[in-house]
Image (cartoon, rainbow, N blue to C red; front, side):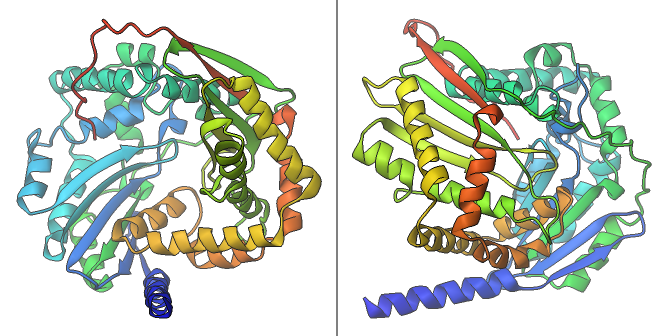
Length: 453
């Protein structure tokens, strides 16, 4: 047992050294930021290109266009015909994909280190030379609509989550689904996607993050070679929309075919803004860990294991966003238990912390768990790049990675109680409930998962 402890300690220290490795920062004359982190444990490189644009930048009537363009970015340029991008990467022994969020759009490849130049060449080409035909768009928009049906409309819990967001955020664009409303997708044109591409896809709105068995100066040389010739573009003015203060509890019920009811709750909470002075987001992160971090958390221990009120229950809070945050709860009640009873049980646990706070043992346990989980995640080159890119694309700096453990360790039990009292308030709460309807077993089931990026 003692030997095992020493092995685990050694592994943790090794991963901490990896996490603490320096990030090298460069900037091309066209505005492209290049961030490089060395990790020489294997001859692999992860390359991620982050565009600082997501669904929050969309306008009413064109929701989903950021995600649609992500699909269209694989439809070819004059040099690389439709469908060839993925084949070229695969033939080089690599893998690639992309994703769209509320805050950013990301394209990534993982390759043997000598193939990094290939990834940059392909990304630079489609940054400015995308060939978006009406024919290809007409085919791909049908894929996106099917993806919406598969991911949201056919999944009752996803519908509840969508309604929670649109009810909690009535002004801020976070209330719109990233994949878009179906009506907007049905009316979207290739020109909508072309306009989005011309508006936002430029080197001065992007960050290239490279992590792996590389030399920073060589990465910079390749970036200058492939991205350097591209011209910067004047970006649209970003007019930030603020969500007005919620002044009363909101509720929404979703009726959909399902076997079990489902509960989702969200309290308005702050995102991290001033990395040097903010403390509330860190205290909220600890609070989320105390309430729902794992099997030792209060909700799981009391509601799932002890009282058997819930089949499952979880807590979520994300401090790193371009917009505001929600402190969220969700769960499925046990058989014979109503969603109202589950909600009351969750509220009771919240009230307990408001009145009595948390113990020092809980505080230290959650700090250790959160920090250890963060360090272990950084064992992945992909996650290291993700962390760097996410911070940069939400208006922070990769340097926050170094400060994170210190800021978390500084949180006190009194601060955790204070944020619970301040933000887990009924006037800031939105509740969404799934009212399960009979399932038509004879209805045709979707057997094929749509191809998505």
